Length: 183
Image (cartoon, rainbow, N blue to C red; front, side):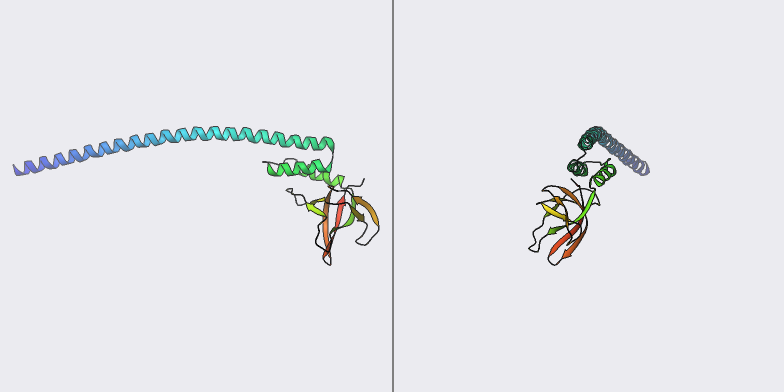
């Protein structure tokens, strides 16, 4: 009878342990189902957000392209530079090479100007565009010369956009070889 009691106790313990394992497994399965439901909700939200971002991206590209079209219509350096500035902030600059080519054609004259005096006053301000070309805005009217100490061949107006090809220090002052638009 002792062996029967032991066997009965062991069987009961085994059944209780099995039942407990089943209950815990069921609870884990339910938790996993809940997690899966939450993940599906998050996935739906991510897909919606992705769709919204794509729409915003498309709208932004359309607006950026309209700035390029405006620049083409005016065919002015200032408008092409404005396009490059706006496109560099946006998500794409699909007309960059074309814009740089158009600016290069408009900058049809070469010369030399003093860009900084010996007191440190700068006569030009860098224009931030995403390009290897260095564009600057003229801060005051400047005489363009055919050499650092050459004769005057042109005049730059305030706010005119120029391309600096190379900078030459001259004591505390600076001169630059430039490309500019002849008038």
